[in-house]
Length: 361
Image (cartoon, rainbow, N blue to C red; front, side, top):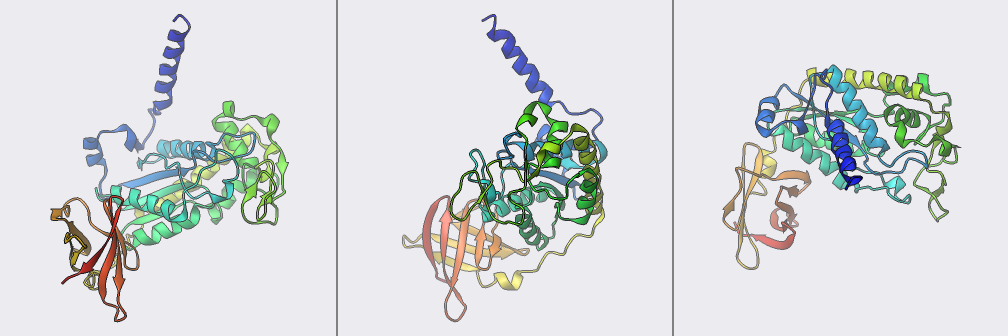
């Protein structure tokens, strides 16, 4: 007990310290406030920043799996000091298929990654905000964010995000690269982690690896058909990393993040697409083989459903994910058309149960 008790107190102290915010912050972290305070903060004028960084993805033998997460967290802290924005919890899962042969790496598929972002933004936008910015610590995540942004723009919501190939970020990082070739767990990422969490970095295991130069596709730690052998998991010159490069490089990158956030705060909102005529084809009564009825209706440019006489229209409506394909918190619907392009039936999933319904009127 004499040993365990002090260790327990140490753990409590460490946890409390980890959750302490900088008193100089201008931003507010949503996870720190109550729902009643959130109600005051989530206004139409608010800008919501969403950090996106993998919580578990390989970054060589010298960096932790949480490297992307820690960078997203670090940039969020810098933003919090300089801008009055709302910072949402870090999204730690995304589309990272190239690293799945390295133990500990995780990924969700493209559609799920896109949908995750869309649904998070939709949830928060329902309370008022229409401007969102994602601190995107990733490359393969970019196409999912492009897709999500297009979907949300059609609903009158701005979603913008950082991307490493945008000129402003290229210029922000360039002064701190000593080699032009880089890509993953490299000189800059390793430097960033030395600045953020040196206790998690083992530079004795950092190597310079350019085996992926000129190649595309997934890396593999062992030779397999269709893969690119990369025994280190590093793509670049990790051994050149320094704390100073990390501090200066992150400050430069954060400056560009803040410039983009400022542009989001003042940009014009997109006009929501009027789907009234399109949605008319889906409106009607549908019946499954047991006689249970699904009623589809529309109001204010939205589709609503009533299943088994349970009306959830005040809570959920159907969002269009693809042509004839809709989803809500409880129900997914794929409408089916006949040769005359008339909607005649639908395949549904309601809380995991799948069934067909036929349009009766």
